[in-house]
Length: 316
Ligand code: BTN
Image (cartoon, rainbow, N blue to C red):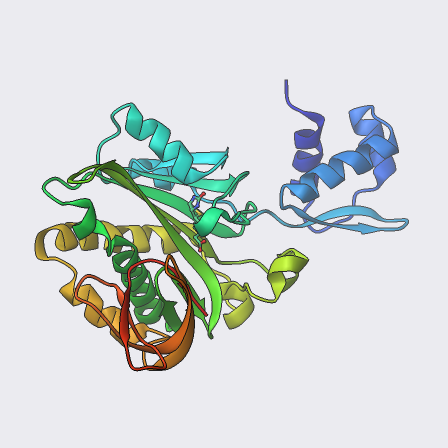
């Protein structure tokens, strides 16, 4: 049986430009006006924008920005409306034999994960939260290390060239627009010291959020493409174009190595040639970020002129 919430939606949708009174809806559905209000709140939580006017009633202004499930599934992309984390979900499928280059995207993550054990805020109807599964044969875990930077380079190039957005990359996994973080990459690997079983590349991009959509603790350091450019993006086509470029790029990287991507990182980077602070397994370090190695590690010249090779860490 159709839920009452959906009946209200039908009424609102077939009366687009007019206000429907709470009385009218409640008598049509045989529920109280308080119950109508509750259902309206439920629809708003799902992303429907509904105006409410005293003495007039309710009017549907805008439907939620939804990923296009049919278009995604046509490309064999696994779509979930909500999931704990796309990285965790694709790892579960990988354990059941999901083939390489499979991709999983979710409208919402309930336990989105960031680097260094952080959470990743992943509300519905506004961002892109997806993971790719890679099964490179004949590649050692060490040789796969730059895969995060390859991902960053491809995403930055796509958004710069196709959408003229001022995207830069902050080593090793942050994507910035106007110098503020709007995206991140979480790469995970299962394997042995000399052999990769599979790699999972998780990408989170804030696309259509308004600045006020971010929780207080994030709003000073996070942004979205919409908040910076004033442009609203069709998330499905944005994703499909990036996904296409990513799949091609991984194939290229597994055959040809990191060099062409390193050039792109150097072109789009927001840190080489600057004084930076680094948190790495060796502690905290202040120094000059002088270059990237052929393997994607960061070279930091400290105050005494000694150059350190930082394979893993965070800069600010
Ligand atoms: C970071 O900057 O800390 C990395 C954030 C990565 C977030 C993405 S969203 C899709 C995928 N699934 C997750 O749980 N995390 C990654």
